[in-house]
Amino acid sequence: CSSDLRSVIDAIYMIASYTYGPLLGLFVFGLFTKRNPRDKYVPYICIASPLICLATDFLVKQYAGYTFGYEMLMVNGGITFAGLWLSAIENGKLTIENEDDLMSLEIRGDYPHRLPLAQGERRTQEGATM
Image 1 (tube, rainbow, N blue to C red):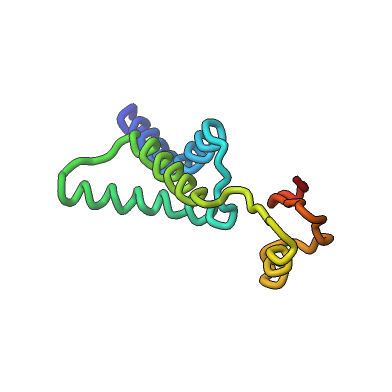
Image 2: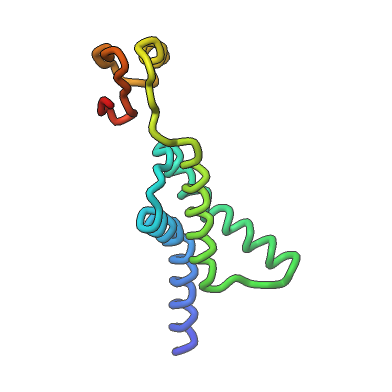
């Protein structure tokens, strides 16, 4: 009876290592970095990470004979962290130097409509003027 209970608990922990890995990666990324990941990619990263871990677990078991245990939680969190880090590359603040740049961004729909800038004034992505 105790071995059955132990196997059920192990199964729960193994499932949790796949589902809580992205949460761990998101938490660590938010806690230890000031980077801004692209919001539209975050759900895809959090879904892809467990799928990558599942494929990795299968392939490593198939070719190396190693079975991942509870460390899959850290691997999963690490993959999520790495994906968030990569999605934050080149996602800094958008700086607009002149009114022509602002107009071209508005036409493409990349920037919300704002009043024209005064001579020598710059605007960041958040809308604050400099």
